[in-house]
Image (tube, rainbow, N blue to C red; front, side):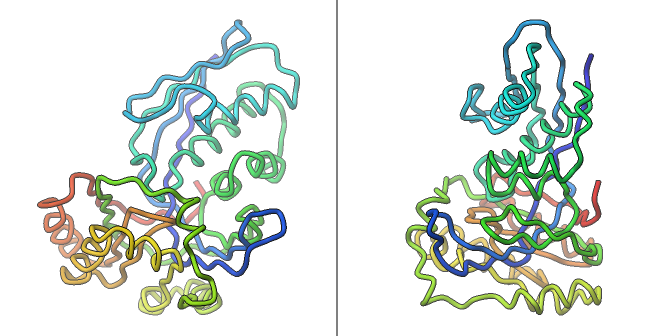
Length: 286
């Protein structure tokens, strides 16, 4: 038996870090939304009690370092499943990009195995399982648009933003999320106004959404990696109405309601950045 599940990428419209918790994680407030850039996960149940992974993308681990592998392993152990699964990942989301590609693959694996093995788990139960794998997995189980708090596992779904174009550019560098959080000085950064972003989305006010974009992690990544700063400046120069780094980076996205402007930004960035994408904001739950 075989099942196919879409695993869309996310962007952070707002990302705030409030304080470091006693458990070592950081308390966050993040407004996230899905975009029309997605991996496709194909799950095939096999008789052998093993998990195997293959992928079309480079730099994807085929062992327990892969979050989709961890998701399958977690389901197998929690529900004492003796059969195995082959996970094929058609990789379209760039790796280590701040777009939750691995987390979305894990969420898609949880949802797919729930169907494949007829487990009858609710989205809430799947999201709770996802929180054991990584901070973004719970959001990716739901998709759509949401406010994520706690360490990212407390999800409150909210209305979708108005539709627009999203141009993404990822420089050919890697960024360690752990290092970015370690270097972040919470007391010495400009914190985004999360409530203003939530209000702007509720009112479907595109201009206010652009004005309320904010990510405290930019203060670290832009300082450490000038190429990320350069991409952000180029997007602004090319006319994006809103520009922000997603997650801990290094991907930067630009928003525009004009297709012709999105095309111009896309073309302008292709000259010095290999990984550039022009997609639509999804916003709604898939």
